[in-house]
Length: 313
Ligand SMILES: Nc1nc2c(ncn2[C@@H]2O[C@H](COP(=O)(O)OP(=O)(O)OP(=O)(O)O)[C@@H](O)[C@H]2O)c(=O)[nH]1
Ligand SMILES: [Mg+2]
Image 1 (cartoon, rainbow, N blue to C red):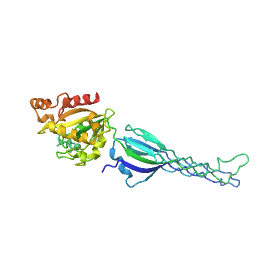
Image 2 (image 1 turned 90 degrees about the vertical axis):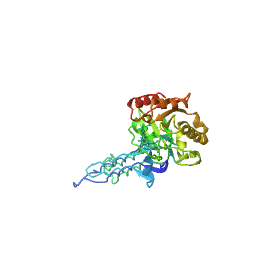
Image 3 (image 1 turned 30 degrees about the vertical axis):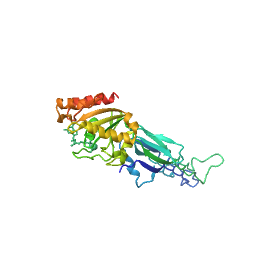
Image 4 (image 1 turned 180 degrees about the vertical axis):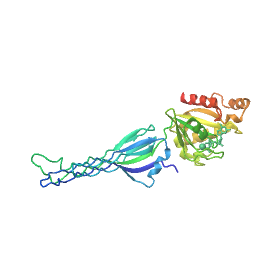
């Protein structure tokens, strides 16, 4: 199951305490060092959509605390920063609803909670009136951020179509994604994302008749199509009835939300190596006034042309 929501507390590191210490000599003055700073906590967007899974059992994520100061004016080590990977397209809302942060680009990094400052040791706390402080400062607590994270799919392009149409294969060819491909339907159970020249392509699990009523993997994925800028509707070249394949998907989209039917789309006849030019012409006749493209993952020129067409949108 794809986790697309999570409640989580992010806590930056606590500053380390300052040290109270004195030089061992007879009249030894104060020499307690400062505490180290607590680690900062960052969120970084990743193209791995399943990244929210890490929060299924963890509700609190903390950066490291700063270490306490030592004798001989030795400062404590700073706590190391922590980076938490969050799927691109996540919306992070603070529990009080006041802060909204969106991670829209893979690699984007934000500071979500700042580490607390270390406390000063008694060496630094000396002054002309207080030459031998018997105390030191505790470190300051790190910031904490109580967040609700919800995953939204903001892909530029969405590969849609019946199961087994070759959607994941296209994603793998176009991007460095490593989506599972197999010769049976419903291979893809959760959307996969890939990046093509800075644009995100989503491979959406196959839809079937009745999807809008919850059949197959159904509605869960129709909602993701809403966010996509261009639909790439995949139809297998060796289908018995390509026109019907197309109509089935369009019907489900319309049933779910008629707005989907107004989205820009291109139609791609996949696995075109399985048919000849004449058969393609026949298919073409059924899709007058539509942008139609044939593509085979085994044909380099096809793939290059396909890339150009989608990137021009
Ligand atoms: N001959 C040929 N076979 C292809 C091509 N593209 C994909 N296939 C095959 O078609 C089958 C289905 O491919 P997938 O990429 O898993 O299809 P899918 O649309 O992602 O399927 P689901 O995830 O089940 O919806 C696999 O056996 C692929 O090897 C192609 O261009 N030519
Ligand atoms: Mg697939």
